[in-house]
Image (cartoon, rainbow, N blue to C red):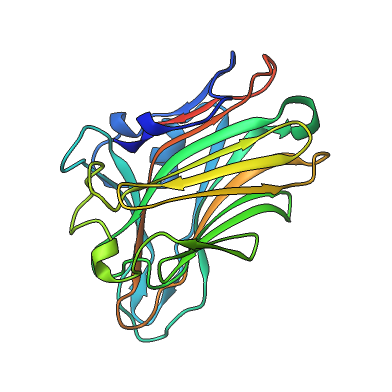
Length: 244
């Protein structure tokens, strides 16, 4: 699995908040199921309905490894919805960036039949203010709206197969380090490509929410995975998130 290749320098902490995907039964991932396996954070999941389809969240077994994943899927439909958020994690205790800095490491992928040919996005937020935005669209990585290069062809071959497999070539690891001055080092890497990005965020902000988004179309829909999500801070009074 790609998590072992993380370059994060902040992956430690004394207070842990954990979500144990591996202890969840495969199948429906309701907010109740997610929250009952979470300490220190609260989930929200979108249940958008349109074009005769509903955005559905499930826990999927690992077809090639030992790490389960959250899968958010909106099937092919007739109303061609715009970008929608799929799942959010609200931190019980916000991370005060200029006091601690923090690190995040997580794995993502898309279901075969959707690829990265439609935008998928991950955001770090304070309240309603966007602190960091990472988007992949048609194989191109952008961070805060800036083109950072290619991570694949954007075709269906740049997607995980018909089921979750943490060892698949097109499972991507996103590793983010933020120091207490707001400097951001981001690595988006996988088996076939790696992009390194340096950017920044407001150091006086308080990071309090992580959010996943996607932009399904009416022909293929869209489906995205989230696995092995970790947020850490070196502050003993801060938070450590571990998503298995």
